[in-house]
Image (tube, rainbow over all chains, first blue to last red; front, side, top):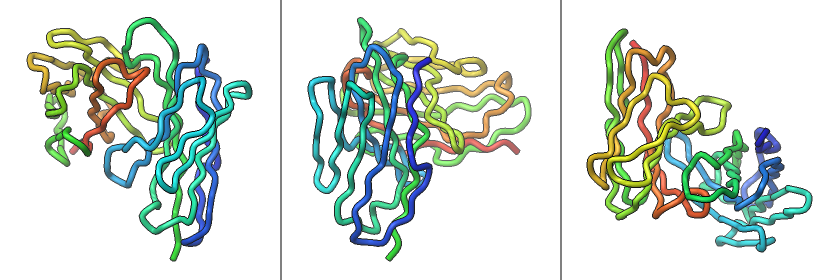
Length: 116
Length: 114
């Protein structure tokens, strides 16, 4: 069964600190992994997308890593800001012929709170 | 939120009533999608469309219907057959196939049952 597990479920850190969110998956055959940020009551916004051959990708203070051998990914946030408070969703794409959306598996997200 | 708009932001449904959620995009994307988000759960795919006049069921299509008469528009109807419609509904689009490409999401519609 294709699954995406994220940890921790929630996290509280002080402004200015770094943090790392985890994503483990069982999706096979693997196509790509993406991280989204979702503010409360809003739609998700893409942060990074990585294919099998990529093991790291950055977007400003956000850095995602991928280990396709162990089927693990992490999202590292540097020098956190109050605006980083949001849910972070890991999504894994399954390789198929064609391009439909039925091959995407969404994690439940990690709820991150940045305290001043 | 990019070039995707959803309306209304909040929608109330009475028992036995059908309601339609609007989704419009000006990104010239071929593919559009509807997801449902419930508290503590990952997004679940309701329907998707890769081309005008064609659409496919997702994982939880029962009680929902869609149409794709124009490239820019992909409305979702929540029918009276959907017994638990209270949720946050998200529309998304991508250039072509979502498996290899980034999806762009709208701001969402929250549906509540009276």
